[in-house]
Image 1 (cartoon, rainbow, N blue to C red):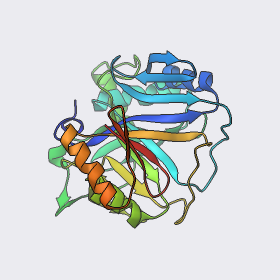
Image 2 (tube, helix red, strand yellow):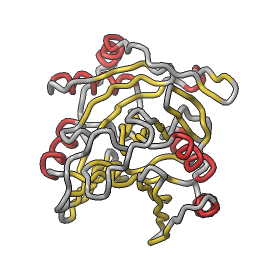
Image 3 (cartoon, rainbow, N blue to C red):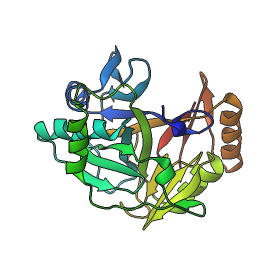
Image 4 (cartoon, rainbow, N blue to C red):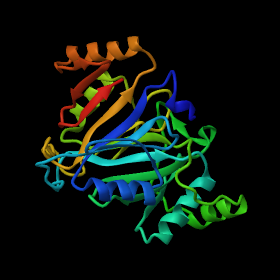
Length: 283
């Protein structure tokens, strides 16, 4: 497991999507992305990489409408692979399936991008060794440079790594959100949840704990003041933020209350909505 996705780090856990067609989306995430079904209950499917931990949850229910453009909500969730060779195997597999891919070298990671059948963004990436990341004071240098996909494919071929579904060690590396107000979001995720700004792009912030390049991405690329998708929309339903212990979780809830938010606790989860209407649970 990545050192940035276990104690003492606070990080992102499972992502939950509202979906219009559960069968189609389950097929995509199992056959194309390579996740495995952990549990099926009614119109809810939990998907996993390791057979124990849910990474993605799909919910279908009556009355949902397709995602609306220029709204706050999910930009992408990001699956972190254990190695460069695994990324190469994924690129080859997705290319065989005719999936259109974006790609970037971020100086801290190598990433590919795609959308699921309902327009939810997905990043699949591997981290470069942290000792090679360049820190300038409290911020890490990041960029969006061309990806050397041929070198990544060659690395997979040299090690004989073939696609056999997404690797068991795959984690939910981060989540990136469209928000309506960047400063309000920074205050919520920073002063409230405890993440620190570690990088900045035009109209975007990247935040983390434990010196990671980012666990949370925030942007206003859909426009400042973008309205929320709403609870009756397909797309992001909720995501979890995993704290290292109960004390730190409760402390975060207390900070949110001091900021004027109203987190509600039920069955060990603390639910709250950010200033842009994105819902999350502290666990």
